[in-house]
Amino acid sequence: MSAAVLTDALGPRARRRVVVATVGSAVLLALFVAVGLRRFAAEGQLEGDLYTVFLDPDVARLLANGLLVTLRLALLAMALAIALGTVLALGRIARSPVVRFGVGIYVQFFRAMPVLLLIIFSRFGLPQFGLRFSNFTYITFALVAYNSAVLAEIFRAGILSLDRGQTEAAYAIGLRYWQAMRIVILPQAARRMIPAIVSQLVTLLKDTSLGYIISFRELLRIGQTIGETLDAQLQALLLVALIYVLINLVLSRIAARLERRQRARYRADPIEVRGGPEDLVVT
Image 1 (cartoon, rainbow, N blue to C red):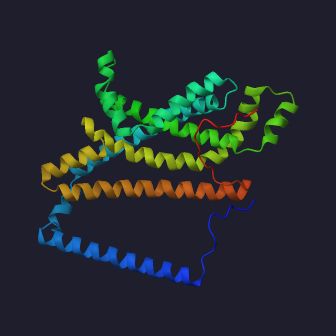
Image 2: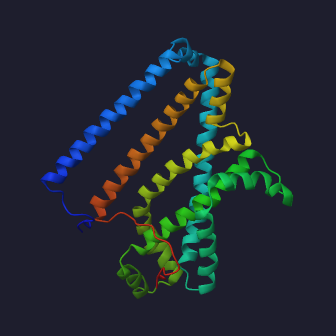
């Protein structure tokens, strides 16, 4: 199956314009970096002592603990979001209009809500109803609520991307609706969904840093505290940013590699996530 062509191939003049724009952007970016480094040097922010202090075992241990908390939060939230997202996806393609309508409201509502607002509501709204938990639980609730809605659309798109003949073949051998879903449809759709799930994990991992708003001691919050204590806030934030970039770069490479493998092996196009009341029902 060949990939769809979204734009016409660039001509010689257009290619020259792209090259000129790329070179110009690179030069402009290099200029900004040079100006920034010059300003840092003028303010004494490039002194070696401001960076070597993070090699201290106690400081490194605090950062490692923050990283472990961040990873634990991200993995737990992702696991719960995948489980809930699977259920929601099945509800989105259910035969009952009432179920589709109710699940659709949940999905559209939480997809539209900013994660930061969900965290604030979880921390300060839920206790008003007598639901008092740790900050870790509040953030997990917010991340699961948002990402389960996003993953529900990813899973639904993966299911609907399968050829209709798969469902018809399952019915032909005597399987019922849920048996066909469990035995035939979901296993095949899962292979297509893996790259999109890993990509969503990248987003979820970055969203864990929003826990600073309720003083949750994850990687970013600990980095801020260390920077304030050592009077090296800029250096601490740069180090934290580098850690996030490295982790997300690895996850992005994994997602890209999985997508290439599944497209080459199963000749499957990338999943396109769409939303709206016009969605069809798998029959």
